[in-house]
Image (cartoon, rainbow over all chains, first blue to last red; front, side, top):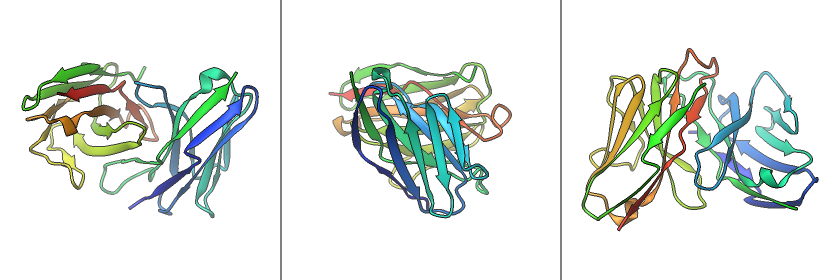
Length: 116
Length: 118
């Protein structure tokens, strides 16, 4: 099965600086890679995703890069703000599943703290 | 659109009792619903996958007789924790998928239910 590794587990940055979170995956069949933001006591919220036919995707201050050859993908947050403080999870799965389950495999999460 | 709700948001129960958690897709039809469990400072662990009208598929190590899942309609799935014990205390999160809503089979997550078993 798929195995997703995520680093670092904690990350502290000064407000205005950039934050980078990296993930690697093991299953070459995976081709959908979403990133989720989870605030304390709440469910995960999708913030950006990327599919394997794209190498980079950007949405305002958030960008994701994908290197399918190396099996790793990264989340980049620029001009960080205190409200970016949360736990971020990467995930991976095939775009289509023969079993029809569409299951996500999650990384262990990164706690991001943005210091004002 | 694509809102998933869970009820209750928090529940405290005595050991040995059963607790039911509801997961609803408010504005779309959830062909598939997923139930996750999350311990403090840990990642989401998939417990089971349920397709509407079918029996749930449980992940290895998850007791199907303890965690009863019903997905009787396209907008509602329930998770019942039977004979709950303190070790069942956790954050339970559901998600839902509608293949007609998202061509990438995106999962939409609920806000979670905090279960505390005394």
